[in-house]
Image (cartoon, rainbow, N blue to C red):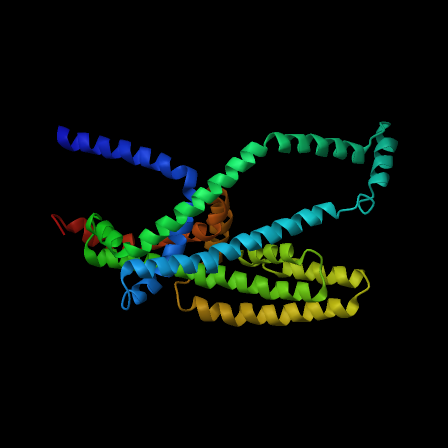
Length: 339
């Protein structure tokens, strides 16, 4: 390697690091823009047959705001409110606090006041919350900036998506047919995760949630959200919520509602899982449940909320890349010179 190449490599590395530092504070929003861009890009290509690219991109950004971002914010607000109500409605008497205190005093000889301790802790937490109100305001400001950045990125990803892909392909040191295989497999994996697992999980969770609302389960929005998340994980799913909910109704003297919820959830949600999932999944790449479990759980830790979507995609993309490498390794090793 001569000095000129070395200098350029060092320069590229430095600027790549600095660029990464600029992205890190808004990484979740960049991932959101990439996700929406991937989903909406086929529509962009169709719209460009009738209108200029910029007009098509603006239209799809507005669609993303109305169809994705606003509903997501509203659902998040309702779920957060239900979660807060769930905590506030917890009655210390239902938890048998007095019996627990008496048992501790009997066994240890020390008198304890759990409710008082919790109240003091809550007071301290309240003081901390007030002191950190400025930080919360900063977080809200950061979120607004982040969503704005995501929308701008989405616009340019849609408007210049073809140019971006041409730039990536031109600088990828692989033959065109290998790139076609690689990007085709990555496209199948991504759609398999989004359509075959995320979309089905949302449908199953919402259908089961309708049953919770219908029979009057408290904080049904929160439990619907939990069912959507559980439905993302194979072999778990919505039954981990609607079965206890049916038992709760039965225990509270509502056997008819309990039976209705159990039958509705078992039949309707079961049909959705048994018939709708295979129809959707069969159109895309087959993904092992192990990949989904590892991707969802690991993705949440690695990428936050967006890891629910990107975690399985990353693991699936790794498998796809390994398969392409295995299929073309000997040929690539034998090739030399420019492609």
